[in-house]
Image 1: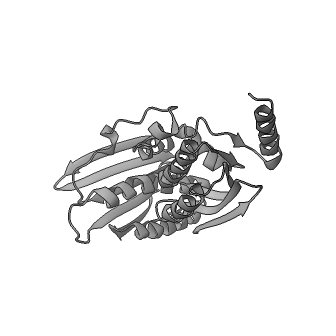
Image 2: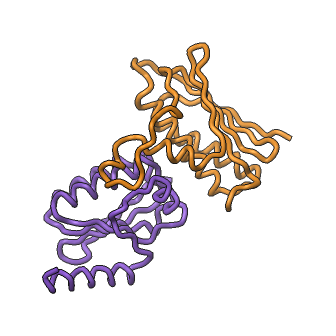
Image 3: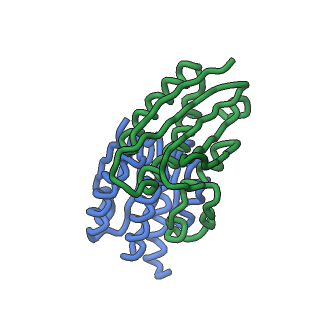
Length: 142
Length: 124
């Protein structure tokens, strides 16, 4: 059985609160662990904050489509935007364990995305970035 | 949920910054403003008390890193106190703050600070 939730947000950072609220409602409705919801929100925030802050080269309002789904014991989220083509998976992760200064130089978000999700997928098609990440609900440590 | 920030003077030249709620892309600028003010003071130690912090993202980490860097440049230090498991998990993933002490409670922090003070007194 599939459960799904779809929403659209504007390319503005305060819109992340709307996603947070919907994600929490979705997890509560499915009676799932709320700490897992927080981790999925963290992944979303890392990806979307980057898109919203750096992905657009105009001042126009854009929309970002978000779909979250649960199927076969797996949670997945799909993010679709019309920002500039950008594959976060191709970014070099920062070298870990270095000094604070070196570790702080950009790219902290991607290690979090990779560590907190099981699978990630990116494609660029028809002028849109699509990023999908998923997490097994059966193996989650909670 | 938003971010709460409570700043107290523990001892001379020490500030405790108690954080609560969410430190994320939206709330991080508030903390940055407060820390910019504190790190401009003649203090030697900032303790980040994270007992009530429920969520942190990379935006929050960067603000804390910036304060750590500023304190270090000024000859001061930072410490982190009482991280909840989910916060510790984030720090562990990005291997953040390798040279900043992390304490599980006030007693452990006090023991460390006493040890450091004794080292200074002994001329080490």
